[in-house]
Length: 146
Image 1 (cartoon, rainbow, N blue to C red):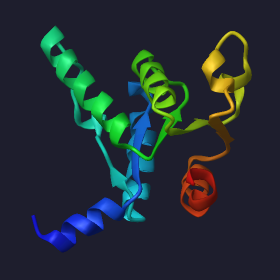
Image 2 (image 1 turned 135 degrees about the vertical axis):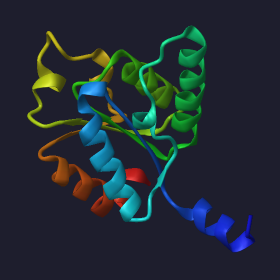
Image 3 (image 1 turned 180 degrees about the vertical axis):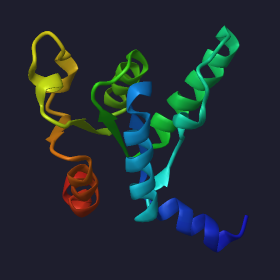
């Protein structure tokens, strides 16, 4: 690898987006928007098909765990799947910055749908449009992520 390319890639903010398969289009949109602004996506799970074997699940789990570990921040789009909640736990355990997105705040604050971990001080809750989220992540990055 060219040394200058390596330096350039290393200086990019690294991110991971977690969610459920029902939000796959939103995950792709956020990821593409961040990449177009110079961010580095640590892993794109949306390219995976649903796992059909335990071995496939294991491989995907290893890739996702590595991606969360290598990220500077993770974004969780609600409603999130069970894997997203594990990724949230990994991120919190590694002291990563976590941004929890809900278009209307219902998922985050409805006692029937929320998680205790959504309300930790380490989790930044964001409500608004998906474009507002991208704007927030890119414009507020220095304050939020430092």
